[in-house]
Length: 241
Ligand code: GLP
Image (cartoon, rainbow, N blue to C red; front, top):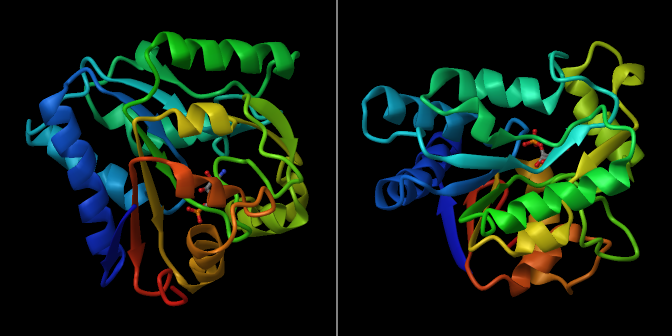
């Protein structure tokens, strides 16, 4: 594991974007596993700038996102498809047909999950998977559980996640109670994993994930066995390490 501790969010976003930028320069056909949430927003803004400056192109890039709220359609401004269009895809030269975000409106999540995983596998797996982390240690929407679930699947969100994510919604009752998330198999098969976290409220999850036992009750702890894990934190998120 490579651990990079930054003085603030700006430096974290800078370092995270540098990794993607050098990857795209080396391989313009990279397959990116992408994440939503407030943590990667600064990184996406830097990627948009790098694209505007013609430093990188997304023309031949393919992307697979981690997760989507179940029940939200892509036009809903709280959906993760909307987030990705708004923060990245609408502002770069990517072919939207090459961008995948799990659908929140499918009827058969089990069948759909299999297809999503197959599609990732058929593309040769992702070159990098970007991850944020929930305050309870979740990655994607893989919530604390008794087992690590390998496949893309439907999950019930925990009270903690619903309350943490309610800041984006008008009312806590508007937060969907379920989500569809990439499972551990597709996440762990990424050639490189980039975990980013900032803020004191992530310090405990980061400590347990990186220093505690590998335990599905702390989903991100599985990353300890990934052969190429890069963790970028600000000082607050790293404060318990
Ligand atoms: C959400 C997403 C995760 C994200 C996490 C942290 O629930 N499903 O992919 O990493 O919350 O979000 P934030 O970066 O806003 O703290």
